[in-house]
Length: 66
Figure 1 (spheres, helix red, strand yellow):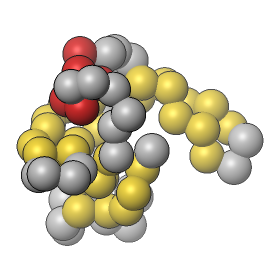
Figure 2 (cartoon, one colour; figure 1 turned 90 degrees about the vertical axis):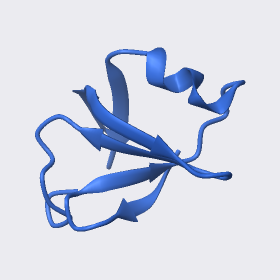
Figure 3 (spheres, helix red, strand yellow; figure 1 turned 30 degrees about the horizontal axis):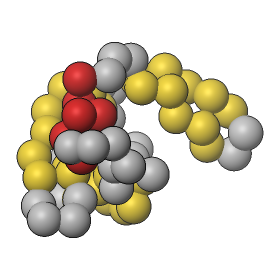
Figure 4 (cartoon, one colour; figure 1 turned 120 degrees about the vertical axis):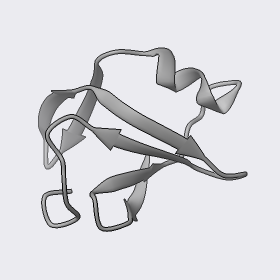
């Protein structure tokens, strides 16, 4: 689940339900649904905190696009 935007470069906060939670980073491509439209995206960068993952997606370079 996308939980919000992280930073000015358009990274996203993601809550993962996989175990371990960073296992989702091995999946490619990701299929994201937004307003009933499915899009295929690829993760180009990642980081993590205790509760969320942070990911950069291909083609998203600033928070306005995210």
